[in-house]
Length: 153
Image (cartoon, rainbow, N blue to C red):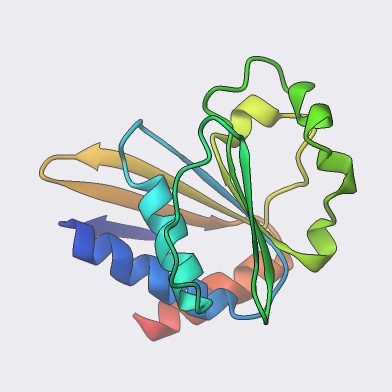
């Protein structure tokens, strides 16, 4: 699935729609793309769709920001500054249960071998003046979510 996002509002809108399509499912979403392409903006909108109204910052330096909501546990990773995938062991990656949480992982290639497999992969590319978003389902659960997303937009 390909979607052109011509402004930040369009990015927020598709992120909200994706968050709504994910609903209460527990899955892993990989967000890949250029620096500044809007990966964190998508994460912010997904969290908003889940009812989170606080500030969502990119966990570039902490690597992980957990969000414990009434209806979900969401882990937002930003692995941009990860020097070695084994560093994920130091933050307790093995203790985080992907079967009971939503994982939003920016720069997943930097955590290869230590991350759970993706259900959905998002790839964002800067295409002035906007962004191109490519969405690919890579699991059966991911296919259900992407199908729901397609039906809603």
